[in-house]
Image (cartoon, rainbow, N blue to C red; front, side, top):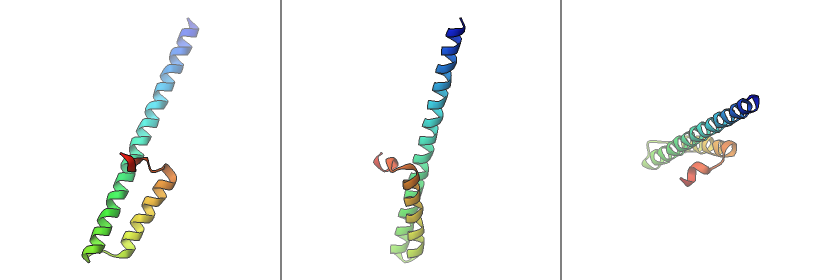
Length: 77
């Protein structure tokens, strides 16, 4: 009986870890999408004359930092 409980505990722990990883992945994708949206808005504002090149560069820098830390998988989907 202890072997069964140990296996069940391992499986539950593994499932919990996978769930946490999936949540982290979704949060990183959302953050990347938000940064991409901010970059687009900054660029649009700059082109329309109501934004600045500095704001666009800041948005680009933030997006590049996110990609360096978490990858660019959010761009594919």
